Length: 481
Image (cartoon, rainbow, N blue to C red; front, side, top):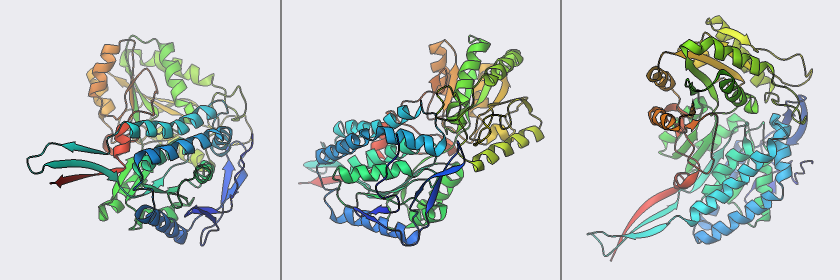
């Protein structure tokens, strides 16, 4: 399977494929080989302004925002059907760009398209206008209307799924979009734009402008943008929140995490090791909801540490297209250097590096890193406080369950969480006390049809479910005679 883009040298603006005005070409580098595998157009500031103007015109003067909900739903269904026909290319693109395992890529491509179908279901069940009793009017109504022009900005780790989580609800709500994918992973957004054209979406409803951070900053500052929908780091999220606050612009921010997994005594050392090793090696640890802090009973600390180290040492590291590979590469050389820097910080602050912490001997090309375990970690260490975004697990001891809950909540983040236990009632009791947007029993689990988002500095708003749709709507009260 190969990826066949029709216009890789152009941007999609106002329903047309156009050459950039002031952008520079973007090279896509495979972490499996560190070789350039694709080249696409890059947008500059003036290209961003063109795209926003096109989206603004399509919203203010086009048929999209005023169309019946069923008409928009039908168009999004056509878009999903078109994307289904290119599922193989979407999977291949993810592997090419970030080294996602070939066995895993089709699953996440399917989830990405399912985001659109979930948005359709939510829109069908949603009352965009309803009458309510009021002492002030014979005919009182509440209307939910599209927020307007949306700048959808996504990161490199799961680009298709994260872009469709914005595109789906925004479109069914009646918004128009400017898609700004990460420069490391622009290919899936190109496929979305091509399929939107094939599905007959009106010109300007979806626009595509891959770009670097400087051009993205220009995009989100454009006064014609009504909302910024962003997934990425908390540091960038803070900047976006500040810019949006200056103009009272709406924003939804799905940001970083340093999520905790609390281990209870009814789980064996081996069960704990398999669950936590399987989680931290998922996408080589490059998942915002990663369970990167393991909180374990102090009296079992050494046994659990030994079991995790043994499980990590058994993980087969390899190229993404090898069917026997269990963990592929980090996404880039820059990401390798980031993870390596945190290893050095952990050692310098007194944590014990039990296993990993370096590139493996094999493969001899590409950006690979061993699964890594730190013990002797206290919750105030840098590696326990900051998001590493790599296959690095910190083991922290607790004295009792209440202590574990306090440790789990002692973080600026609140994105994800888990309790490892066979007791569902106890898991639910603890889950109610954890300040995080998602909680799961026994590992890293997500249902992307449900609301996804974080407490504290892990974000603002939710994606998925009815709550995700509401994030693209404004509420209007109408009092009529």
